[in-house]
Amino acid sequence: MKTSDILRTLYKVSDFVFWQKDRSLVLSPSFQRRPVWKQGAKSYFIDTIDRGLPIPIIFLREQKTDLATLKPKREVVDGQQRIRTVLSYIDPDLLDDFKTERDSFIVKPIHNKDLGGKSFLELPIEIQQRIMDYQFSVHVLPSSVDDREILHIFARMNATGYNLNDQELRNAWYFGEFKTSMYELASEQLPRWREWKIFTEYNIARMEEVELTSEFAIMILKGISGKNKRTINKIYEDKDSVFVEQSEVENRFRIIMDSIDDKLGNEIRHSAFRKKTLFYSLVAFFYDNQFGLKSTLEPMSRKPISNEKLSQVKLAGERIQSKTAPVKVMEAVARRTTHPGSRLTVLRYLKGEI
Image 1 (cartoon, rainbow, N blue to C red):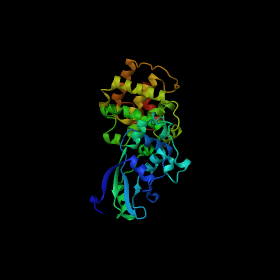
Image 2: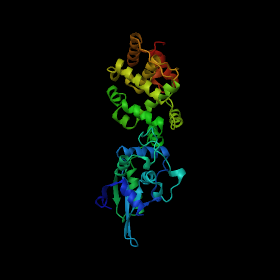
Image 3: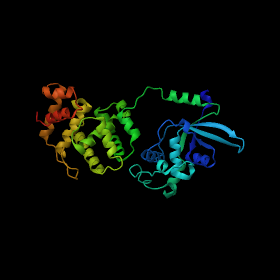
Image 4: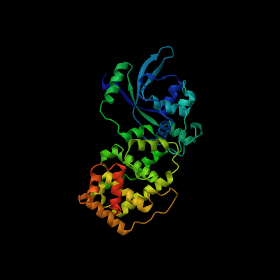
């Protein structure tokens, strides 16, 4: 098959709805390469459509014209879950094999306040129209392409040797309140991540700033902890459906980041705190001074950081950078700065206790 044989085009959601009603669309389970989507993933997808944001390319394959009906048919060979999701949202009767426990879902308010908890028919006309007019980027393969060639195409598309890191896997698995909150908070701080040189563009592309933001949220919720895959995954799971502390956690995180920017923003990129593991300790220092690591999450006013404490943390950072800090501290920095004990050692040094 030549690339010139592939039709690259755009089709609206309404086109897929029409084809499904007309019995000219084939959702082929034989090419389904991923598990059935969770409800959160479906909610997130409909929000993506409503916002007009792009999604991965849909692959169709032409089938030979049905001589009995004289209708052309199109087979979905990649994108079944996307098409099934939008069809079941617009009208469950469009799917002959619709099962409530598998296919029924609502859009979560955390993803989209306008659509949250409403069926398609309950939406305002202008939103219904916006969803129906959304355009998918589609590649249409000719009917002459057989199953083996399609599998070969998929193999080439996935032959990059690229392995998802822990945060990318969380992004693919969780779609609830905690995940949404962490990505929003991390996104808000993007100019600072770049200005302070905490993350490279590659780090940001791999969502590492979201993982660190998640660690800060865990610190606000539970205190100092180590960087542990299981611990982070558990907080995503436990607070996927309901994140009752969301407002206060977000408020405190924003206050701390604003405080750091106000007091040290111009210095971080040239200091020891540019290192992610030490930046964690700096955030812990500010949080402990302004709210208290063992404080409850009841709304409270932040405490000011004195000039004396600010001078102390600057001096501590300089000594860590010049490697003149106490041996115990330098060992904590050099060895396991993601271990809770090491993090506490560095924090105590920033506070002037060592």
